[in-house]
Image 1 (cartoon, rainbow, N blue to C red):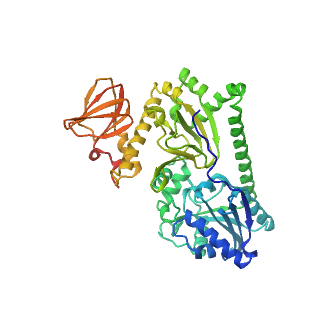
Image 2: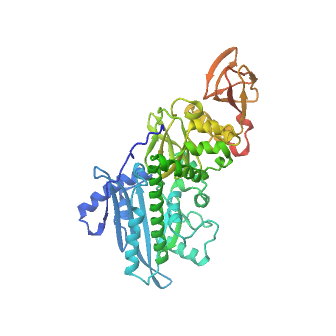
Image 3: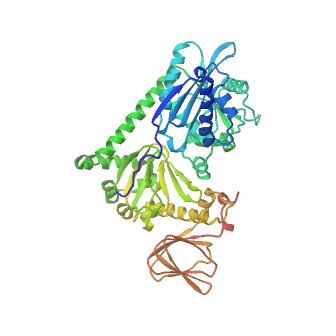
Length: 508
């Protein structure tokens, strides 16, 4: 196979828990400076005062911080837990708040959840009869999803209104902690000043996420990129702690099974018996492959492989040779392009998404770099098997559409054209394009198009008395008098003028 599976870009060498209250003043000051460097790289608007008073030495009964360090003993991430004692409704209550941050290159490879479980369990056993609630003002969908992932009972949640008494309780606590309201009609949304740093591609990823909880968070808190938080509450009791522990065990068992399967594929006998069934199971994440059956499906099952990777692995870089398509079965990957300012994320893909199709269908080198964002399971399909399977609709049509969308979006973004359009608007525009297959020698007037995307083959572009030779993949801006003449068998997409786009693609 052609994938280059590099070592993770960053590795947490050790993690240690500290209690700031027991540290000498000089040690606390040094901790504040180290955490500020991490925090400022993750959140915009970070200040030393906030780190000192809100993270290291808040007005809490107890604070502990798990620090993650790299090979140079530099702090690259943290998880702070604060315990506050409050009286609400004449009952002594423990409110647990937390703050977590990790430099991008190190995300997905730490023991935050297991450590937090131990801290909470110790406090729960120390105060067995006291109500205890976890509370957070989440400023990013990923933080809210961690609650959804591990906790069964929490508020607010999708498809279920917050009980009136619980809503009143949450609002009282939010006011108590001086979380400023911004809209009387939405008391659970509170103003913030330090939004998470993320690219436009990452914001698009969360807006189009297929996860109901992510869609719920964005709908509730559409201005989260300005630092606004969704106040969320959950009871911390024996059932909750037991549930987290069981989820951790299941996740580790699944990771072990997937890792073992990946190794087993190297053994010929086991490979023949196990891999096809594993590929079939993981392909269920991509509905368009459900159309495959018979010999086409069998060909894919025989040649494809399941790849289980930790966060931060680079599958390939722009310029690498490659002839494999990947399907994200679980997890997420980041697609990155090189610029004068360094690598920039241009897309983030979740379960069911495809990538690598440009090199498979157009040949040549990889056009972008791809790395895993979190622990991720992929299905790797060799180009030969994919091209045979694509002879069948709707699989072939769907993959050509994905290919066309990426080529067109890359063209507009790289050329700085139509900056008024967001990524989803650009994709909606190209999806309105008309796919046309041309036989060698065929001539076609394109008076109804603003752009022609050549996906496959070679063509001559005749316009203004001159001819331009074009080889796929390429995007050509055309005029009403432009004529396309195929010199080989070709596949093109005729993208209509922007003025004719539908409401979903209107400029923002």
